[in-house]
Image (cartoon, rainbow, N blue to C red; front, side):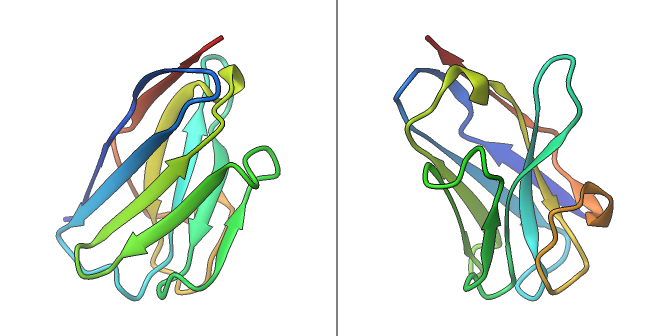
Length: 124
């Protein structure tokens, strides 16, 4: 069984920053890609960022490029999402996900394991 637990969400004013963490347990993810997705009320879940096993390859949604940074610490089985210059449109539940694939992928269907999500609310 695989567990992913997100933390770090909260309420922040526009222009502020938050750092999300995702702790993985139950198996080792040092050789798998991981990603962050988000879902706003009434909208479909969408890709935010992904990182490969080594951390040397990343990809971002256009809407967050230049503001968000994904990173990982394989020794701690943890993935992070640093979010800067937050906007009200970033408000959503943010989900961590893990895929058995080694290469990065932006497709929701490629991810096998999901966390429970953490709420991020950005006020204007």
